[in-house]
Amino acid sequence: MARLRAPGGCPWDHEQTYASLSQYLLEEAYETFDAIQEADQTGETANLREELGDLLLQVVFHATIGAERGDFTIDDVAEGVRQKLILRHPHVFGDASFARAEDVLDNWDKLKADERKASGKAEKVMDSIMDEVPVHFPALLEGLKLTKRAARVGFDWENAGQIFDKLDEEVAELRAAIAAGDTAHVEEEIGDLLFVVQNLARHLNVEPETALKRTNRKFRARFKFIEDEIGKEGRSIEDASLAEMDGHWNRSKTAV
Image 1 (cartoon, rainbow, N blue to C red):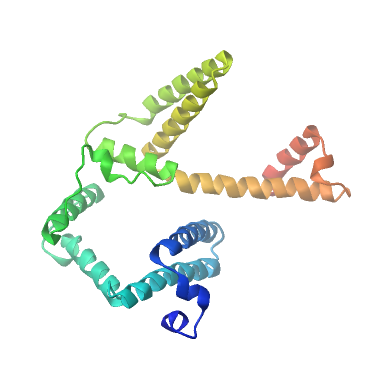
Image 2 (image 1 turned 30 degrees about the horizontal axis):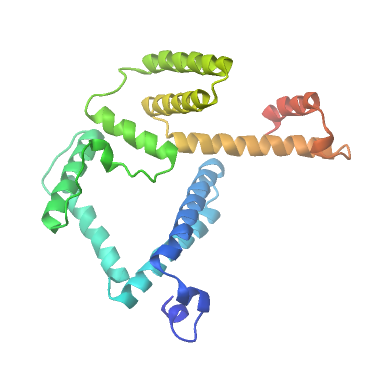
């Protein structure tokens, strides 16, 4: 990467900055996430290995820019992670003892706060514990993080059954908004419904982003089955009726 950035190297690589690379970092993270789902389903890890390499490349790219600017080096990045792992695992590298994973997480947050104070960094002014959750997170992840924060201080449903009751309530409110023709209210109720489903997933120890990704993959495969079946008849998907597509869809459930 240093060679690519140097005079006589690659003009595109040389022009990149922290900011210009940010979109690629996000893209590579999502592609790695997708590769993890593929590996989990198929047991094949070649794509995951490749995507992890692409993600690592982004770290190397940023570190190379950092070294050029005198900000930090790749060794600084690695050393920071090493220290963080040691400091935040006193039950492994020290004398602390935690019986539950929840205790580890609670201590992790305390240690993070202590580290911020010790570093001398300016403390972020937070009016709410929700301020700790970045607003730029994808909506599903943001909702999950927000409700986990709330649950830690006891603001949560006692069981999944109560969430099912809330789910029924939100569906009824959505139906009412649709019947009233209130477009803005429909959007709001759709958001409320998704939020409740995300809470249900959390209570059932299901990571909602992963669950939805798997469903998306399943939909892709089953819709491809429909296209293939119609294609065998020498027709395109646009030529098929809804009844035909529904029939192939039902068959895809046992074929895919």
